[in-house]
Image (cartoon, rainbow, N blue to C red; front, side, top):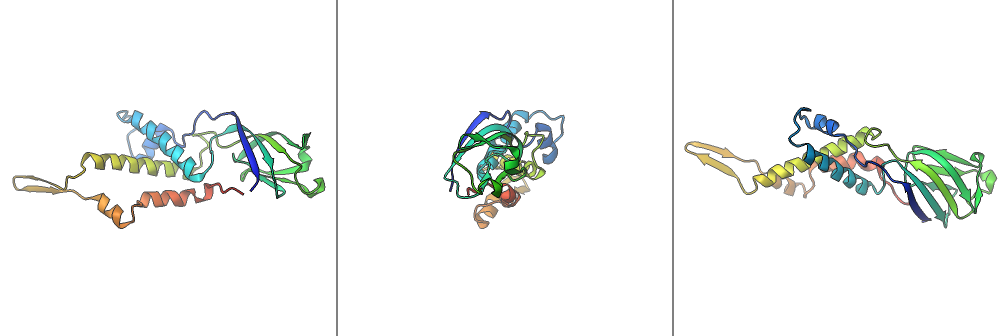
Amino acid sequence: MADRNIKIITPATSIDFLTLAECKLLLGMSASDTSQDQVLQMMISENSALIATMCNRTFAEEVVTESWRDIDDRRLFMSHWPIKTIASITAAGATLDVSAYEVENLSGKISIFSGNGGSWSEPAIVNYTGGYLLPSEAPLALKQATAILVREEKIRMMQAQTAGIRSIVHKDSRVMYFDPNAVLLKLGGTSPGMKAVENLLNHYMRFEV
């Protein structure tokens, strides 16, 4: 594994995958209902951060400097992708011409051409801007995953309010409550929503190389 140091030059202004309006739309809530705006906004931020942690990466657009050593391959994989712009790449203190390397923007991969010796001279330092401008550029799959997590968090809050209540009897009437916790236990503690989220995030996970 290469030795990489990451320095954030300009941090992201937002990490949220959803706007408040998008969240309400996906949850089937009225846009005019502002009674839960504060808690919904917090849920959006919390679950967006959770998704970033699950995927082991930063999605939000930032200006970054990455320095690489112990490079065993002709390729570098940036921590922030997609790559928007590259300000400069230096190898062993020398600035590389754009003809010396090739950028695969969507995957964050930078490859050096074999005509330049076939390998990186260390340290390799990349100054670039990468990631999504959130929430506007967030992929639809990440918006959907965030909405699912927010929905499940709202359900858990409702469950907490009725915890321990199985039925209510009034005169000749009886109301029985469905216990979702019993279903979760049968599923091994993982909800169908979380399984759907994991499937949505598979494509976006970062694996160190």
